Amino acid sequence: MKTWIIGAGAIAIEYAKILTELGHELTIIGRGEESAQKFFEETGIKAISGGVENYCASTNQIPDAAIIAVSVDQLFEATVEVIKKGCKKILVEKPGAVSFSQIEQLEKISKENGAKVFIAYNRRFYPSVRKTIKLIEEDGGLKSFHFEFTEWAFKIEPLPIPDPVKKNWFFANSTHVVDLAFYVGGNPIDFCTYTQGGLNWHSPSSFVGAGFTEKKALFTYKANWDAPGRWGVEFLTSKRKIILQPLEGIKILKLGTVSIEDFDFVMNPIELRYKPGFYEQVIDFFSNSPKAKTLTEQKNNIQNIYSKIISGKFLE
Image 1 (cartoon, rainbow, N blue to C red):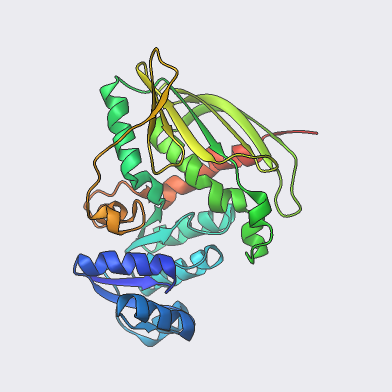
Image 2 (tube, helix red, strand yellow):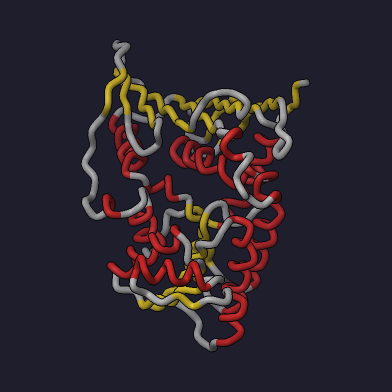
């Protein structure tokens, strides 16, 4: 299969290693010479510099599939270029664009051109998440869940991140956790939301909410970017609390106990060679029925979940 990777950074390197093992014919399209050289040193594959727009204008080739692995502020433009070139199967790094409005535009363009675009929320494919889903099934289903998407604002603020990305940091980064929680727990039917505070680069900075999902599971969430905290999700069944904090691992609190214990689970040895979730995500993307998030699902989540969380009733 002829596959393009747009980007030549660390994430693109990860995809290239996996696709090489799977026997794909790769074309790597980066921007600068420096990143192209680093890519070659890591993978032994020569990357084409100059950017995707220039490359698309200079070739008649159309890939069977493309993976967009550029920085968040470049995702929209790079994906549009590949769609207009004629590629019909595209995996774009999360969250797919820098803003809600760009996702809506991208969904419209993909439909007009008959392209299937998927969002690479790799945490859906963590071994810990796959095992969690099995544990929930074994226990007879999910009763409730809770998630936290606190960001470390003191570390993010000094980073050289483009202003449009920082301004939309909840969408650009926090939705990794929100997507995972509702992927396992089901989409919300109804929920109430509250917000408070603000940073000089993002507002609001504190979030709480509660509701119920299509799986009849109650849920709550919280995040306070002005206070200590970290990402995490807890899923409760009739027999145990399954804790993913960090998301890569599993801890269990069994019914009738107060001791939280580490839960060991078997991992595919191949997955251990790559960034968590990436190998299974790639396998899924190239399957006949991908479980990866579609662009339309992302648009719907923006309208029904993300917009509601970010614009919850503001408390002075």
